[in-house]
Image (cartoon, rainbow, N blue to C red; front, side):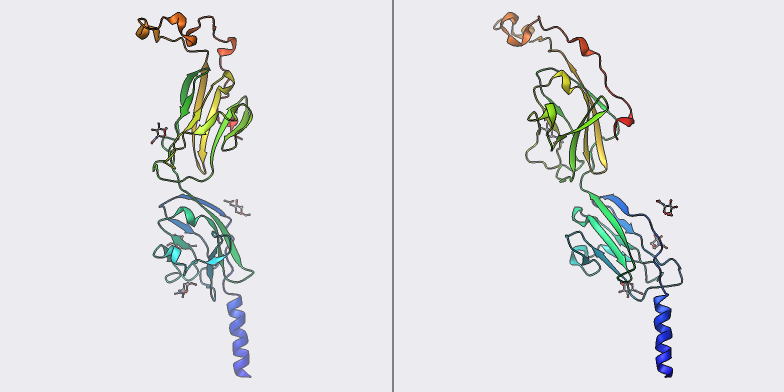
Length: 267
Ligand SMILES: *[C@@H]1O[C@H](CO)[C@@H](O)[C@H](O)[C@H]1NC(C)=O
Ligand SMILES: *[C@@H]1O[C@H](CO)[C@@H](O)[C@H](O)[C@H]1NC(C)=O
Ligand SMILES: *[C@@H]1O[C@H](CO)[C@@H](O)[C@H](O)[C@H]1NC(C)=O
Ligand SMILES: *[C@@H]1O[C@H](CO)[C@@H](O)[C@H](O)[C@H]1NC(C)=O
C-alpha cells in the first residue's frame, strides 16, 4: 500500500512538471554557416520534463535530431546547467538543415519552429541600381551570391511597373516570355538575368530575390541607340549602309518615365 501511494504521487508530480512556455517565435531565418538557437523551455524555471526530444521534418518525415549523425558535432543543449532550458543550439548551419523542428515533452506537449537556411547571400543588396538600355538590344542584370558556388533556393526575378508586380523568372510571363534567361552555366550562385530584344514595355523595376535577400534595379529603355560606329568604320562602312543607324527613328514620345518609386510597390 505504502509503495503504491508513493508511486502515484511521483507520477502526479512529474506530469505537473514542465509546461512548455508559450513561445510564439515560429520562424527563424539564418545563413549557411551561422548558428541558431531553437528556443524551448519550461514556463517555470524550477521545473523540468521527465524527458524531452527534438525532432525535425527536414527530410519529409519526423526524425530524431539529437542522435542524428547529420548534426554530429554541431549540437548543444543547455539542460545540464539549467534543466528547464530545453533550447537547442545548432552550429555551422547547412542548407539541408532547413525544415521544421519540434521540441516535445510528450505527444500533446510540443512547440514547432520553422528554420530557414539561406544558401545565398546576395552581393550588394541595399541600393537600387540604375541601368539604361536601348530598344532592340539586350541587357544583363547582375545578381550573384557572395559565394559563387552557393546554390540558392527560391530564386525569383520580378518585374514591377505601374504598381503591378509580375514574376518573370523562373516563371516567364506576359511580354517577357521567351526573352529572359540566366546567363551563367557553371556557377550556381550567378543569378544574373539576360533580357533580349528590349522594348519600351520592359522599362520598369526589377528585383532578384532569394529567400530573405533581394537586389533591385531600375531599367530605363531609350529609343534606338544613335550609332557612332561610323566614326570608327568610315573607310569600310558608310553610315548610310548600316541598318542600325536609321535616323528616321525618332525617340518615342513616352520617353519620360512613369516608374513607381518607393517601397510600397512591393506588396
Ligand atoms: C506572442 O503572443 C502574445 C500573446 O498572444 C502577444 O501579445 C505577443 O505580441 C506575441 N509576440 C510576437 C512576437 O508575436
Ligand atoms: C538533457 O537532455 C537530454 C535529451 O533529452 C538528455 O539525454 C540528458 O540526460 C539531459 N541532461 C540532463 C542533465 O538532464
Ligand atoms: C537557454 O540557454 C541559452 C544558452 O545559454 C540562452 O541563450 C537562452 O536564453 C536560455 N533560455 C532560457 C529560457 O533561459
Ligand atoms: C555571372 O555571369 C555573367 C555572364 O556569364 C558574367 O558576365 C559575370 O561576370 C558572372 N559573375 C560572376 C561574379 O562570376
